[in-house]
Length: 344
Ligand SMILES: *Cc1c(COP(=O)(O)O)cnc(C)c1O
Image (cartoon, rainbow, N blue to C red):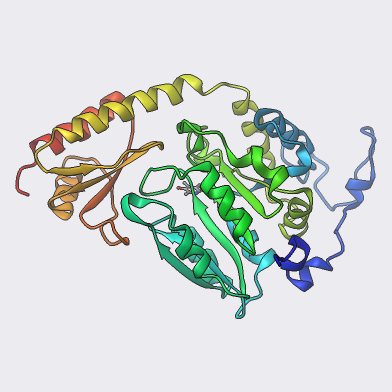
């Protein structure tokens, strides 16, 4: 028998009483606010941030999910940390993640004193479904998937991930940081039928707001309300709220289309470079490239003023560089160095 979400939550978190401020209780707009020891002198930022309702409604319209299923955090990194704080008993519980994948799952696990069981991807970076299930025991609370996956760039099959969520006795967190660049539908549309699913997205990549720090989690109302109770009360600052609200109103379709077309071009041109052994297919805004001598090419790129990520130390990524797709001119510069690099 699978545990319910309620049974998976830590005891101390399940019994939390929601914290509310006097400001939450006053619904009018002409009040004099003498409740929070703020400065009364207006400078645009003298008040604590308002409740996140308006921004959640904006995200909710964009994503086609009710506001009660939206959590907003200081980057997706906050949502990743909250998964551990809400579900995992420090020093006792454990979590599972695919590897190679995003490094924050492991970091957040370590900070929360949770053992992380990393399961290598299958052939061609496929989802190792059986091994993931086999890695679980009665103290396993979380399973992290990332699709499109960082750094491999591939998506996992929707039905395979949902079947895994059905079979896994714990919460399944699917990180969709790069979903805007993919040809797939988000798993947000599967939340109704999968109470143990948490979908993470971010404004840091396709939306171009990495500097504002706005991450999102989508899950059942109960999970979102647990996240809201555990987060810091004012986790999204006023400046971020205003800028995000403005930038979310400006469509990104053209930019996403340009990145996707540049991705196609970068893959094609890298494939023609003598030092390149393999370019992995990508549904993200980066490509993973296997070369003869990653260290040497990395250095040649640095010498030419192009910074990429050497992922060679990650599991099953030997001699592999992860290269972000930039503007056509930036890609030109990167490609000309890779094309001319012959000492491998
Ligand atoms: C970049 C990235 C994020 C984004 O994290 P933020 O904290 O929202 O900036 C999340 N997950 C993955 C896999 C990423 O590569």
